[in-house]
Length: 269
Length: 86
Image 1 (spheres, helix red, strand yellow):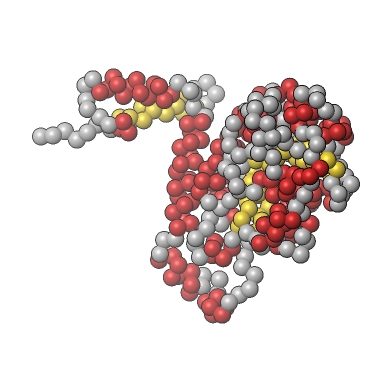
Image 2: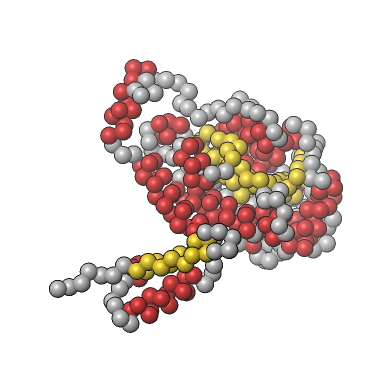
């Protein structure tokens, strides 16, 4: 039985796909057989971030419609042999995903894998609802910025009312907060919401804090999940995040400004 | 507390403004999420009834349903009347 984890946010552009790719890759690095499923039908992008865009033959919707089987559609990662990607379709049909079809594919994946990472599209329409419906756990990706925090709260509401677990009266989805694009310098200046601020408002367990980092764009440019850039701050922060996700106790890093300038050394802080 | 913190606390920064605004809107939206679907229509109907007698603005009526226990919910109706002209 696989654990199904949805990576969601409500708001677009906060780092869902970057995080899905990094966390999925991280779980595989830890020895867990993992598949990342792209639920963003019509706007496929996980393949680019994972660097397998030219190897897509069949997709998620083909499997749902029985035009291909899972073996044909799954793309095995070139770097890690226990990591797979199920790409989204480029169809413009909004109703290409439906509960019974998604459930069948997830059940089939569940026999094979330890973790299924569902990369949700932005918004609260059917694609996003399908991505979260069957989840056991949710990683809510949030930027320290008003619209992102508000949309995350909205998604938390959906997780607790519109999921399979909610509808069937099962124990609720386990919710994790992943704060991305965090800039400690601006937090210190009072220009950005702090980890504590966001935590106070959303009140869910903090899974990780990913610093704003040039490594993220470099990684997506080259189709390498940023977690493989183990030299970078963002890569290390994702490694910590994955360790916490599987129950390890890892202290938080990159919450403070690394180098102390002359001004700060004089005035403290 | 450092000297820098002292100066910082005298000027209100944008992050704390953001936090205050978020706390208010998120609390408001959570309340609405947990209330029944008919509540907005009920609020509009009540507004119409009161308007037959008193001229009030849209935001002068607020209706909320608070669940105080398993068996009891309280419908709270708040109407702000305009100041009487003398």
